[in-house]
Amino acid sequence: MRITTSRWATGFGVTALLLLAASQANAQQVLCTTTPAGWNVPAGDPVFVSGPGPIYSVLSSVGEYRSHSMLSRGPDGWVTHATSITPPTNGDMSPYLTPFCSSCGSECWNPIQPSFLYNSMPGLATISQGAAYAFLYNGGSANLSTGVGPGENFIAYQRAYSATPTAQQSANQATLANNMLGPGMAWAGWWSGSSSVGNQSNWSTDYTYIWGTSYNGSQIHYGWYQYMNVQSVPQGVPGVDTGVVCSSSLAMWQHDSLSSQPGYTGDVLPRTYNNLSGAANALWNGVQSECSSTTGWFASVGSFFLNLAWSALCVGSSEDGEGVCSSAADQMANCFTANQCGNTSSPGSYGNNKNWQSVVSSGASAVGISPDDIGCWDNPANGTGAPCSGTGSSIWGWDVNQTVQWNSGGNQYGCWN
Image (tube, rainbow, N blue to C red; front, side, top):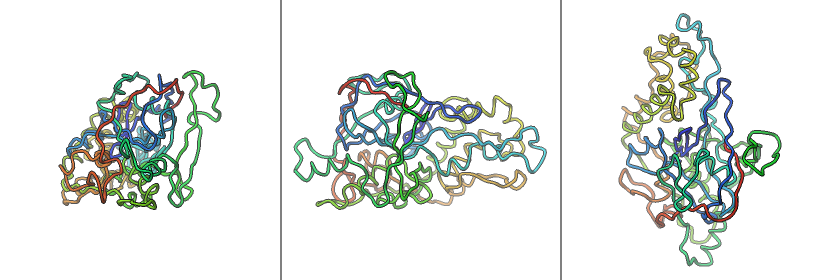
């Protein structure tokens, strides 16, 4: 799970996410590049990364480190992960009236487009290693021996099975690397950036093909509320309203690939987080700070509004006169904690929409699966979660960090948007 132009790793699965800046028209930039080589990660094994951003701040506040996870489809192969691009700003804009009427544009109290937050894309998708390289390093270069590059603090992978697996383990490893096998699962392909592939001999073109994963005909979107309630995703069913995030999609992949195989030890056991105050406040502060400083993931939101002086115009209609960036922070915190990603009421009746504070003060618990749970890190430092082996464990949880190296072959082209 993951996010940036900088990064949030939309980690519990942010993820991690590489989020690219939105233009005034809310168009997403397309970043294309080539890898200097493919990575060495075997098919069916997850890659874990840790990078700065609000999601990393949330995970750090509960004692966790990894902020995004990706499934390798093999050296020089494809990569599957769940992400969101930068949420676009709200298009309902009439700032010249705000705050003098009760029917002004809802951008003041919903700075981020609510419809996108409820159904964030690209969701669960399979991309080329060139696109993964663009996602991870934002056009920069990785150290080929360690895999770590600009914007990342850490990158490693873990094996599903030992170096000398049994015949059944080998079969399971191959199954993990293949397409999802669950009921209703299918592929939905689209062009990233254009309608044709064009010349991919260099990175100057701005389009490539991406495979999305669908469930019962609908693309599986990225779901912010997954951080609060993972629902039945570990049992192979995407959240009906909340999709998946990077790490919950790996738990779903484990179920769909292996639950019918001999010797299966059960679905990944979610972790319960009992104190949400630190995490919720870390999220709010991260969003508000990035928006206000116009750097990082929410730079596009802050720049879009501040460059047009909308923040000042919205004071009085946005909650408590705090301004656009505080409204954006509340909107994201509400989306995470209560699956309330937008409010359609007028400014006069909107009031103080800090429902996330009510959720936190009520003593509610979150039930989720993070990248650390999939990798079995720091268990059970912040609540009982998946064990490292046996019943309820991640199939990858037994292993330690393996070094990611970009050394398995020639250049690969790809785009991320």
